[in-house]
Length: 229
Image (cartoon, rainbow, N blue to C red; front, side, top):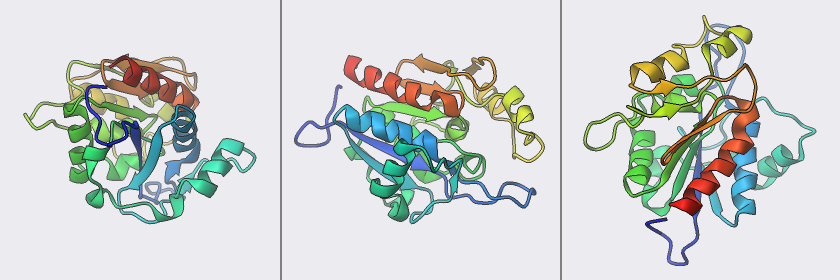
């Protein structure tokens, strides 16, 4: 890529996780969708990258979608430092080439408008890095502005959890907004695929995926974007 913060030239990626636990008024809990963090973590490490985690509030973020029989998820939870993530406010973005906003319904509450996540992502993008997000993770992008005041997603093609998928899981009335609609309002062109199928959209250094089925493909696309930059 066009920049390297680390002295050894190692590519460094940051995976951002929600700290929000309550799923609207359902009485159920949510959090970050484990596979959407674990699969990029594994893919990046296989590429030889350093990978760190961050959450909105720090500490142990709430888990959702855990598959206890999934080796990738088990390895991630055992070794990635999920139990003690740094707080977004304490992260220096200049050390990172990539940020991934992992999904999970919790992101819909604490990713949008978060000044620290915006600070980190804008810094990475403006230094030539890659910003990526999967499933509900693009909630971080709906009002993410660069230092010149422009919306990061304006004029770009993006993927993200679709309205049809939100209807299919029965949560359209619980989430604070519909993600696809908010991305469109921010000036993006939301590009949907059939429900719960792998779908990744690459627009320059912005890489987005539609749903949990897209997490690994998203990470692979991010690796390609870094290698070609």
